[in-house]
Image (cartoon, rainbow, N blue to C red):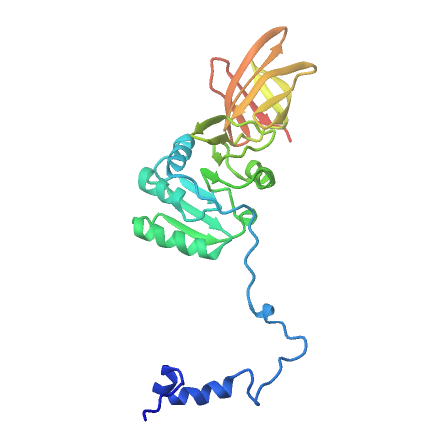
Length: 281
């Protein structure tokens, strides 16, 4: 009579494994309990909290974002929440721009880095794991965002304080609250918003016109400026776009239009009116 073994085939081929299985079995006599208070979760790194959901932009939206920003060769583009890297890879391949992408998810950073290498632009763009609220903004000519309304509002003060006048910000889907977009564009079901970072002009100036000095006080709300010239002449119709400025004020009973640009701590005329203004404090 043939004897048929009922043991699994792998035990018949590797009988030594049966000994190891017994030694390691939870029912083994050598079983030891975990120390009191032992928590294995302490040894597993938790997933980093996300400031915004991980949603990838459609490629036609990416193209429209970069076109809306007017990206130029050698621009430095900063993508906050860069995901798989598609925005910066397109900026490098299509426009010749450089870029840095930041994401809190290390897996996305690795994915984006590999995608840039495959696209042949690893020499132009790089990706890093970083909190977007700690990312320096001052050197970027363009910042791209696809975050949330709340995160946009949290990052807005840093954009206005740190970025250079004339730098551009493009956000997919979400605006910046009461900071009105300079341009917006719809691509399918997606709305894009673009802002030009305004020069910071609020404060006291000394304006020189026709050989006379006038105290000029400017107030500012994003792109809009107001204030007073001289004792009581109201500054009206004022706006600033990047480093360019325009406002109207009465001088000796005559309405004068002032157009100029910011150069360091001076406003210099760019129109027929020969005037300039220097910060007074």
